[in-house]
Image 1 (cartoon, helix red, strand yellow):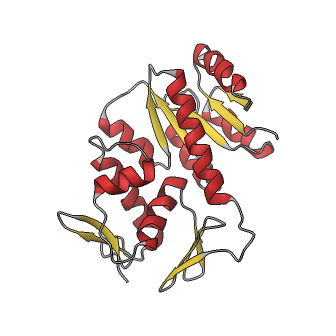
Image 2 (cartoon, one colour):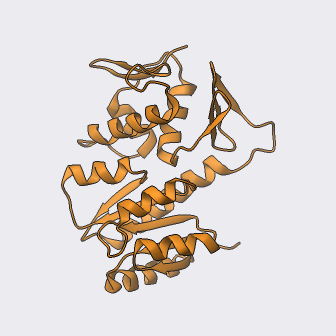
Length: 231
C-alpha cells in the first residue's frame, strides 16, 4: 500500500536533506519546497497528506503560507521554528497549524509527530461503511465520518485539532472539560503549561462557528473550570 505524501518546506537545505533521509526511510513519498510560494505551487498539482512548514523563509514565510493553505485545505500542518517563545507558538497555532516543533529538534521526535498527525487525520477523514455519523446541535452539524462541519447549512473549515476539540465537547454535551483535560484528550500527551494553546484553538473554533464569538451559543466558558457545549 502506498505511503502518504509529505510536503517539506524549509529554506535550510541541510534540514531538508536530513529530514529527507528519515521520511524516506519510513516509506513516505516526499515533495520539497524552499519557500512558501514554491509550496503553494506544488499543492496546485499534487495531493499532499501532511505539510512540514518552516516559519522563517524568503519570498513567503510559513505563517503567510499556512494562512493561504488553510483557505482551501485541511491536511495536518507541523510548523518548524528557531524561535521558542510561547507567543511564537501561539501565533503558529492560531494561523491553523496543528503542531509546532522548535529548532534544533530530534528528527525521531518529529517523525513521531508526523505519524500521530497522519493517524488522526486518517481517522477523521475515513468514510464509514454505515450511515455517516452526525452530531446535531441546533443549526450546528458535525459529521464525524466525513470531517464536515456546517452551521445553518454553511460549511465551516476546521483544522484537525479544531475538529477534535469540537467533537469532544459535542459528544459530551453538558460536561465541562478543563483546559488540561482537553489538551490530554486531543493532543494525547501530558499537559504541561499549555493553557494558551487550548485557548487559541477554542477562540479559532468560535470565530468559525459562532455568529458572535464574544457571546457564543455553542461553546460556553465555565469560568475557573473550563469549556462545555450545553445540551
